[in-house]
Every structure is written in structure tokens, then in C-alpha cells.
Image 1 (cartoon, rainbow, N blue to C red):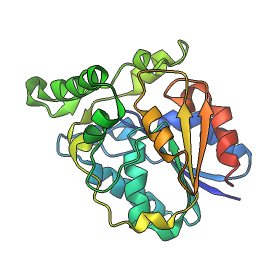
Image 2 (image 1 turned 30 degrees about the horizontal axis):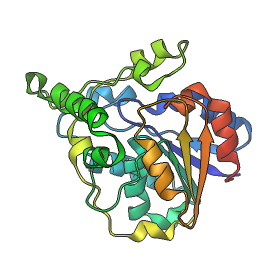
Image 3 (image 1 turned 30 degrees about the vertical axis):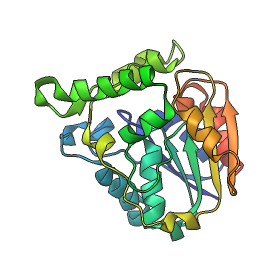
Length: 242
């Protein structure tokens, strides 16, 4: 029996892994889908001063409180920032890392600092301008969710995703990942690229890690929200690590 911790991306919550988690549990494994402070069912805790550090502590707290070990830790999109931080804090509890169409930061890099590396200038400006512009609106400090349509999510799933996503603090995208390097002890790493949408910043990270030792690259023909559009297929990939 394996232990999976599935970490969601920006504006989402643990809810987005509903069907993937169901498939993994049906196969006899333990699955945890923690929700970050300020989103999902924790939207009532939303505040402009929530940072990447808050969310790293959320996931570390789940692993520690549930007394988990040999964790297969999967992070989607912004969740790649989070799981990188978690692996740096508690590498001894992590068996494998899975970056699901996700950012892969190095020490001192924030999500917003990675965008110019991963996108053409025009596309980068659209994303950065949208994030920061939304946060400036009424000085809220909160970014509105990117509509599901922009990520090429299946038409039948768009209403669910748009209904459930909520604003998130800009500070989570601006704070750099502060890493000691301890996460390098986790040698088993998989990058799953969602190959069915563009402009995608994640092609940059897939190409970067593809030839690195310890990494495996998998491509899936779907939207950015792999766990929403191809939940069973994602579960099948994750089960290969069990």
C-alpha cells in the first residue's frame, strides 16, 4: 500500500483531485488531498498576506499530523512551488516527487520570476499583467482565478472548475522559494506535461528536466487540469510509483 499526497494549484482546492483520489483509493492506497489556506473549503481564511511559505507549511503540517512516510508527493501547477518547499523541509518523509504540469523552482525563484524564463514576452505580459492587475484592484492584494477556458479544459468540466476556483493572494506568486538544498535527497522525480494546451510555461520545465538524472518525463494529451480532464489516466501514472 502506497501513500499519496496530492497538492493542488492556484485558486483550486483539494476538491480538484476528487476522481483521481477515488481511483487511487479503489486500488487500495492511502490518499490525502490537503487544501491550502485561503482557497477551496478554506476560502473563509483568505487574506492578502498569505504566502508560498503558508502553503508549504500547510502541506508539511498534513504530512506531520497524519504521521505519513514514504510519501508520493504530487503538485499541480503552482503546487510545484509548494512541493519543492515541502521536499526541502522534510526530505526523509518523501519517496517520490511528481510535478504535474508544474513549476520547478530553484532557490530564490518565485513563480512570477519564472514566467519570463518560460514564456514568450507577449504571453508573459498577459499572465503577469493579469495577476498583478487583479491584485491592484481596490488594493485587494488578491488575484482573480484564470478562467478554465484559458487552460483548454473540457467543456463539460468548465462550469465546475470556474464555480469552485476562488481568488488567491498575489504574495503566493511573488515570494521566492527559500531552499537549503536538502530536497535533492529525493531522487525519484517525474514530470507530467499536459500536452494539450498553449501557451504553456510548462514546456520549458519539461524540456529542462527531461535529461536530468533521476527524472522521468510523461506527456498526457489534455488540458492543464490533468486531474480534472483525465483523472483515471493520471491515477494510472501515479500507480506506477506505488
